[in-house]
Length: 443
Image (tube, rainbow, N blue to C red; front, side, top):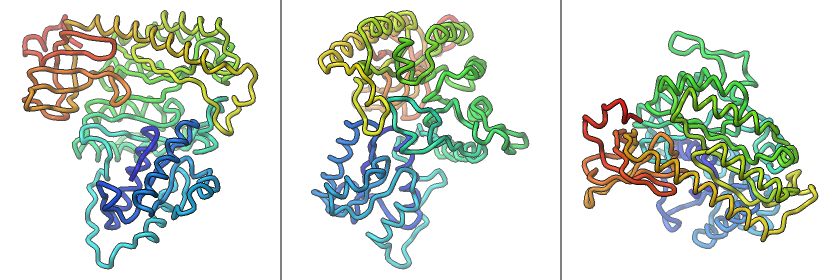
């Protein structure tokens, strides 16, 4: 399987593989050993579509028997026109259609041994962390996004089903649950009147209730794709209690009121700054990551300067940026004031330089502190290890590089004394017991 795109696509791939494994199929490590190749595509941006088409072409060239699924399934005619040898094309979340296509392309021999699936299902991530998808689709209609046309409106999963999956994942070795969706804050608004029984108590399908219950199951719970609704404030006490990691992934996208309105996003950037200050009063160590779009149609130099000033004041911990690019079917394509590519590049460079400057200062302030770190990899030969603090999600944020750590194992959560920092990463050593318990150095 070739799985492209965001963690939500990765979860879809895991669900497809789990169903196939239950029927007796096995995964091949390469094209040559596969009877059929699955390509789970991403169609969020034109660059992502190009990557998906390239992956389909490579799979056909290397194997010849290819099934396409995912977001680009909406463009089946275009895919077939370019790759007429594709065996089948299905859309996002159409798990049964994918399985049916695999059955037709590579039937399992009779009497195959099929008891091959662990209770937690098959995973494409390391054993110690897992993505937990709580809903599909989105009710927003942002001007730059076509997700609702690809995945539909919000459909929330039952809270008890999510919690059962979380228990299975933790029982299988997961230490960190990464909660994902298109809009985590909106979880449950479509089923708000359908509370479910869980462990002798009633759980309301709401972001707060779900986060609280997940915090009782897993050591670390990290919230992604959080839209800054007012009720996000309710999560702060859960972070202060240690039930949820002090981390929020909030895609602000911009700060200029003019650009936000053009994007069809709430233009309340001043209110957001007030809320960030309030969150930090309750949870001083909260890490806020976000993504922004530069060069959106109509963005002026004044708009961009406003964004940089806002970023300086907000002092976000982790920041990424995209240069705006038109996506087929997006409302933004019809907006006037296209920003020239060279201007996009110049603004992108200035934005990333500002974010790196802020990141370096915030990480430098952590030197001398002791932080809890989850270990992702260990090199027994060198004695080094790589992990992440509570402020770092896998793949997208920074890392903590350790010395004298060859005795640790993947998935361990250990106190680490921070000795140095750069723009993105921390460097340290496993803390001695007296360092780990000193109140002034806790993290």
